[in-house]
Image (cartoon, rainbow, N blue to C red):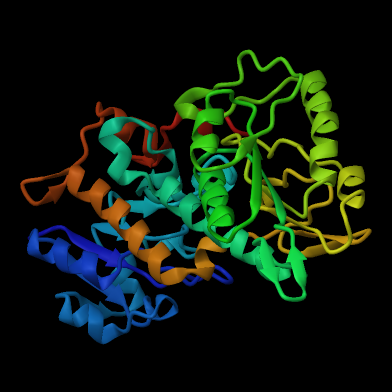
Length: 373
């Protein structure tokens, strides 16, 4: 029997993505996989059941999708009791943010593989769902800011006079930050960027941003996998102080800085936000992990003086068509990478599998997750 991949409907509030789109399902079927999709699973991403049938999938009940050999999800299902012991669950599981959920998954006996834990090495680039979703989030964040800002982004010269371009500051020049820089530049804004990693300066400048350099010791700030490492308390406090004047001088601030498995670093003080011009906007992509801005409230808009602070929780879900397509390709790449002779059978010694596997055989096998309280 071929490996059966199940695609349940996402049940998290506001989640419109689907783990596999019909295009990717068709490729998997051609490779010999069976696919069962819960009825209506793709509707939020504008993929109807008939499109899945045309791609070679069977449309069935939720229990069938959750009972497959490999269950493909965006977020972890809220009914894991329907998962089969020894089956594989592949998705964005947030293992470092929800240890209790991982313990519940372990008790089901499922092999849980977290796509966000895939290491950033050359062989795993095609499986990098985290970067794919960060690209969507960075793009969407700038559009959200442009819509909320009560002024133009570009320089405009009209018969009625000249409008200067909006000043956009992007904090964090990782994947999301670089996409935010590129998008703000396309809209005509004057863009500056900051990242604690000096190596990020060249990438930011290549996209047309001015790189903000602070009088701050940044030794040891390059963490594993290219992520920024957390600063000590004194340097973090100094960083916030030095960034204050740059924040206050901006019309838009897009915050994207995250340290995996930790609270988002504080970059923007409440005082800096209140010093911004009336109508200014802060979009904090780090809101799910507490936010880079001291005033961020996850999932809410906050008025601070004349400025507004937006704390979106799931921007990729607001662009479900392309977000789902990109996500599906990364997930399918991981599944096919570890399929041998028609069976999904990862090598426990493989470095990608070791980094991404969270639970197996009824236990949490990932050291960082196991160490969480």
